[in-house]
Length: 508
Image (cartoon, rainbow, N blue to C red; front, side):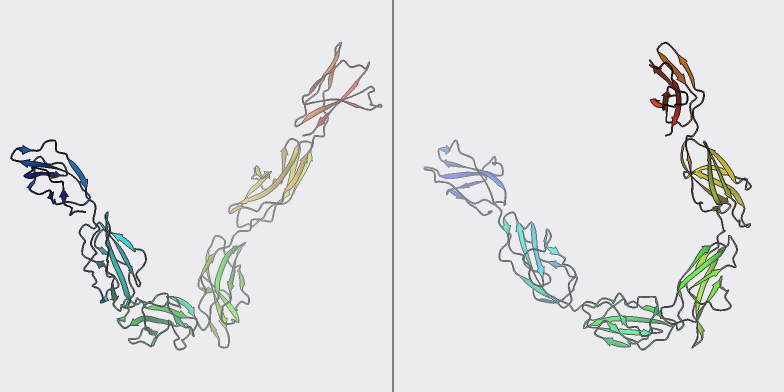
């Protein structure tokens, strides 16, 4: 509230009153009145102090109280003078909304739509707002509610306007797609529907004509039957009461050839050859196929089937291939398929007959040399134990190898190295190496209360079993005395007058 007056009770014998007033109490009276009221100029949301000093011929009153108060905000007035004006027509579809700034308003809620929404579309600080692009020839309603700390304006008007009939946008997403190939000669042309378009002018021909071939109200048009292997141009121009769309694209496509080519030609490397494969035409039945290498026909007689091996090739060379379809009734040849490149690879055979024989801790490996391609030199053999390279043998006449190992089971494979790389890996052979030899060097020393003895250690042994008997041949059987991980043992207090011993090896 900014229009309040100040009041106080009349003071007996007072001839007049000095008024002190301000956001801080003024040092000097800013008014002198003879009645007990005074109206200051106030600002909303502001704290003030004031004091009244009664006066007469005898002087001024003393001990006068200082009072204070704070003004409140008044709600702002409604917005006025809308732009576009209320009931305006032919408003641009990208128009901004505006109104006169409202004194004391700190922001504005804007309501907008074909029907007024229940909640504001936006809250803005300036006296303008731009809605999303509007539809042409459409009526919109809008309202602005001015706001501040005192609340929202009341009695806000609802305004309306109607947009202009806008030019339609250009057509998009043609079918057939722009630059399409192998289009059927009876294809139908189509495109996406364009908002606000009432109809479409369609231009079509080998060269785009100056006048439309047709005007249609739907998003398709069927041209006359087209020629095979021909290129056509076409354009669609959306139209409405405001005129024709601008920036319309010209699209092209090419119809399917009369003699359709094969597709998806793939050339792949083979051993001393190049393998070709392709897919038959989707339309038509060829009587055969011509194969071209580096643009030169290499099949005097058309090939039946969908594969071909070109063996007239040289290692380390790469060739470019194409295939055409040959037709009869009527006779003709299609355009070439896609190009595909490849070259031959060398035959890199694997050594054969890999075998392993075991003699105690020696594994002897043998194999046979493969039949080799003399166009590429062999570099030797690679032996692998458990998939880890064991040895490389460069002497091609060496067809065996001895591997010294401990007890265990081992897998061996072999490859041959060529200048072009390694051959495939051979089949694996398994060698099981067991501990089959007995300990040697057994020696015994007897003392008063024990017998100590030792023997030569066996490589790879897990442990040793010690047996005893009362006869040297073990007629009454051998009894297990102990098991030890070392190659020495002490027999404490043997109770027999005579003992015989033997030691065996325990494998891992």
